Every structure is written in structure tokens, then in C-alpha cells.
Length: 475
Ligand SMILES: Cc1cc2nc3c(=O)[nH]c(=O)nc-3n(C[C@H](O)[C@H](O)[C@H](O)COP(=O)(O)OP(=O)(O)OC[C@H]3O[C@@H](n4cnc5c(N)ncnc54)[C@H](O)[C@@H]3O)c2cc1C
Image (cartoon, rainbow, N blue to C red; front, side, top):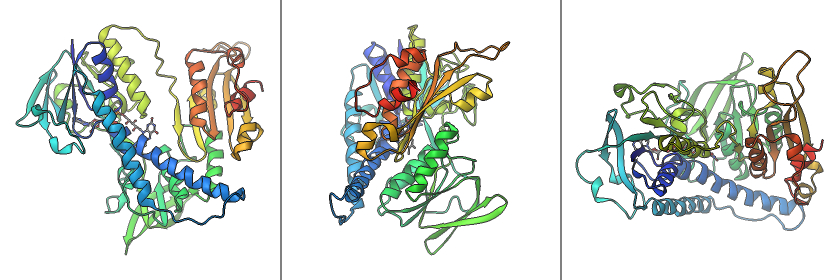
């Protein structure tokens, strides 16, 4: 059996590695650096920024504890250099793994010639820092065919159709990673995960940050309680967040940007030295030639079934390109689900239990159903809560802001039915120190359909932040 995989992000390259280890011959085609958005301009560089922000916040904390006087020079160039070094190190690791004997890595841009043939325009210039340029990439167009094709071409930043959106100097999440100075005033358009992460780190780096968000709350897909309280926490750190604000235009005079927006019928504006456009991402459908080969897609992405199969049974689409869940681990696991389906292997992966985290300070994280979602679907639930201020470890750390909320299926009212047996844990939502790590325990249990009693029987080390789960579970 052989497979072509288009795109070497976490959807494509991880699937290629699993397939290769199972003995499948893989042609992996990548137009840019391996690792995709995640490694080169997403998860990894942003988390390198987050770490540096945490170190700076730690210094401020040390001063607040009276441990040190606060006098230091902050060198942003060192932040950028460290971020680049982290990315390069990990990219080198991926390059090394892709040297597997069953993988042919083709550097270039792929598009479909027909439903079984992929054409590649070689693109050796798009390989930063790579010592390996396979000889096959040089020369004219190449063609590949395979039994199965997996599309994993990811997504690109979206923008607003407003005057000024294309002004030079309006940054996307890719460009802000390479700015050379910390802006004194940063305006972030969009209060979703990406916008808030940058708002949080640049606040730690010293910027005055204003977030402008169209929806009623930040983080529209998250638990509303969590979003409201996280907004307050970020506000306490000096980040101004304007919700229900519809950005109408951006203008620039002498290097100063004015972002205008409508809020409750009134025109308001914010001035900034830099503007980050963080209004979401869109599937990277361009240049694949899907319409000609008859693969069904919408502006949201390629249409797939539960095993990531398109309407053409030998073509699959995994990761951001199908628009289902734009997360790196979702891309990887969708890839494995697709591969297992191709190979006729059964698995217990439940893609509906997908953890998600926001790496602000404090962090937020979520898995499973929210209270609102259950209410809308008429599922009776009860919510159990605990607060980090009652968690011994959080108190010793001086990081007591945050809570944990667990959503449990409740008894249905008389005459009503629920799809879930009472006591089954359906969701866990929290913000506070290391929320992104803590949520993983809940994810493990929820994906195994655990009940409240199962959860309650787990012993937690004392004193740890994970006891916030235990406290919530025991009410
Ligand atoms: C700033 C930022 C921060 C993020 N932080 C997180 C996080 O903390 N956690 C998390 O889970 N997710 C995060 N994400 C999202 C995550 O990066 C994506 O969900 C993930 O990268 C999607 O993986 P993918 O394999 O589908 O696509 P990608 O990683 O986008 O990879 C697609 C690859 O396909 C290649 N390609 C595209 N078209 C072609 C073509 N025609 N021919 C050949 N190659 C092609 C591209 O060059 C790219 O390398 C973040 C994203 C951003 C932008």
C-alpha cells in the first residue's frame, strides 16, 4: 500500500511517521518548512514567547515578595533569538524523523492533476536551514500517484473586509512573531485564543494592550463563566478588553494606527503603534485544484465524514483544512483516524473529546461539554466547582486566581430522557495556573466515559494544583 500526504504540519508529518512505521510507503509533500504552522509560526514559537513572559512576570513577583529590587534591562532581541533557536531545534528533530526509509519527502507545492495524480512544483528555496535537499526536487514538475491521498494543507490567517485591513504594518500572527521591538501600544483585533495569547505575552513584555472583540464575550467557544472570569483576570493585569465591538476601519498617520469600532451604537476608537489582526483562520484550499477533481468543500474547509474521508473514498482531509477543530493535536489524531480507516485498523479514539488550552497568564483549558451547550441541547446537568484560592499549592505559588468547573449529567426531570446516564462526567473547564496540564486528567477520564464516582476514586498528590479537580469532584 502507498499513500501521498500533502502538507507536513502536525496532521501530515505525524501521520506519515505512523504510516511509515507500519510499513506503508509514504510520499510526503511540503511547500515550506516541515512542522507546518504549529512548529514554525504557531504553537511552538508562541509558547517560547509565553515562557519568556512568565520569566519576566516571575521577576515582578520576586520584587513583590520583597526578594529582589526590580532593576533590569529587558532585551527583546534575546526573546526573539530564543524563540528561533527553539523552533530550529524542533524542526531539526522532525527533519531527522522524516528520514525514515519508508518516507520520501518532496519539497514543493502540490496540486491535483486528477483524482489519482498529484503534481508538484519543486520549491527547494522554501527550505530554511535545511541541509537535505533531495535531488528529486530539482528540475521540472513531478507527478505522483498512490492508492490513497491525505490532504493536510492546514490554514492561513483570516482578515476583516474593512478599509485599512491591508495597510502595510497590520500584523498577522505570523508577522508579530518577527517584530523587532515591543510596541508601546498594541491593539489586538479578536479576543479568541490566538489574540488573547499575544495580548497576554505582550502585556508581560511591557506593551499597553487593548483587545477589540466582536462577540459578547472573549473566547466564544469556551464556557461562559470561564470566559467572563478570565476577562476580569486579564483586566487586572492591565489588558483593556472591549467586547461587543465591531471594528469598522483602520487608518494610519505617521506610524500611528487608529482602529475604529462600533460599540452599542456608538463610534469609538483606539490608537496603537501596532495592530494584530487575530480574527480566526481559514482553510488553506488555494491551489489544490479541488473543484476540478470533484472533492467537496465549503469556505470552511473540505467536507469529511467521521473518519476524515472526503466524498472521493480514496481521498482524506485532516487537520485545519477540514475546519472541524483548528488544533495541532486534533490534526494529529484525525490523521491517525484516517490512516486506521485506510488500513482497516480499529481504534478507541474519540475525536469528540478534544482538549483545548489558552496559554494566557493565567492559563485556561477545557474539555468536553460546556454547561451552556448542555442547556441548549436539553441535557440535564449539575456543575461542581472549586477555586484555586483554596488550593494549598496555588497559595504557596501566589497564583490563586482561577477556578475549576466540572459538568456532570444529572437525573432528567420526570417524563424526560437524557442521552447520558446520571453521574457521567461530561466536561471540565478551568482557568488558573497550569490549567492546560491539569485538564489532561479530566480528558483521560471523560474519553473513557468515567462517572463522577470513577473520578472521585483517583488519588491526587498533595500539595499539587491537580487537587483543584479533587476539590471540585468532592463538592
Ligand atoms: C499563533 C498560533 C498559535 C497556535 N497555538 C496552538 C496551540 O498552542 N495549540 C494547538 O493545539 N494549536 C495551536 N495553533 C493551531 C495549530 O498550529 C494548527 O491547528 C495546526 O498547525 C494544524 O495542523 P495541520 O497539519 O492541519 O496544518 P499546518 O500546521 O498548517 O500544516 C500545513 C502544511 O501544509 C503545507 N502546505 C500547504 N499547501 C500546500 C501545498 N499545496 N503543497 C504542499 N504543502 C502545502 C504548509 O506549508 C504547511 O506546512 C496555533 C496556531 C497559530 C497560528
